[in-house]
Length: 328
Image 1 (cartoon, rainbow, N blue to C red):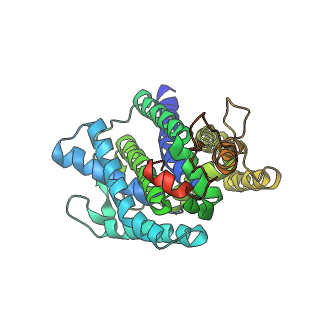
Image 2: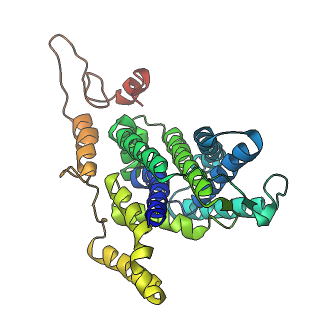
Image 3: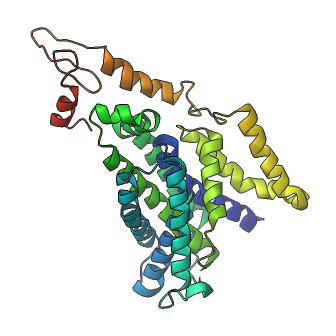
């Protein structure tokens, strides 16, 4: 019984860590990805190689796996973001990236045995340890989204053109969030490998990417606690529906349809669990209301002060002020 519960808690921690990454990219930046299983796969393989062949322990190997995934996030993210890929085009490009990773790993035999995969991985992923790591990831994600970086991400998601006009380097911000997203998913891949002790290129499939994306979208865009709860729910749902195993996928799909019909904004609707305020509305107030007209002047000082800052002429040199003061 203890091992059964420990296994469920470990899977929950893996899901939460991966969902944290996609929360930043999809929930806040608005970039839909169907290929984040590729980052989990890269992180898993990199960390396993570091453990088995280079003598790394679990935590350094997990960080190394995350960094490798983040590096590939830079390699993939910069040309796609620079090329203005967005929406369906970006989602399909990421699906192609995930399949490219899977096929490449299937044909590399030194170290990773190609399609046969790697076995005999040390089982480092204890439930208490990975839950602690997942809790840290949730906290860091929450703090990041509450910072100016999170507000910038929301401005890009909701009004990308307007964000550019006020001085936001959209490409840089998207690539940065893409790399952070890849880092979290790479860490989740390491946790997975060190729990199941066996991985193949097919371990992280399109289904994995879809499950992570579903947790973010159906729980509510612009929320951190929502996707975290959804990750827990998605990990426990197969166990709850085990008694109706033949109908499990049907019930799972029906539940998703009901959510989209009656709560199209997601279960949390952009709200946090312990906050009644809508995060999107809060950030819009901070970003737009003050930047447009809520100008505060101090005595003897003709400089306007707002979230973005603007000149004394009411905003004509707002972009230049942002650049000079490193507002973004």
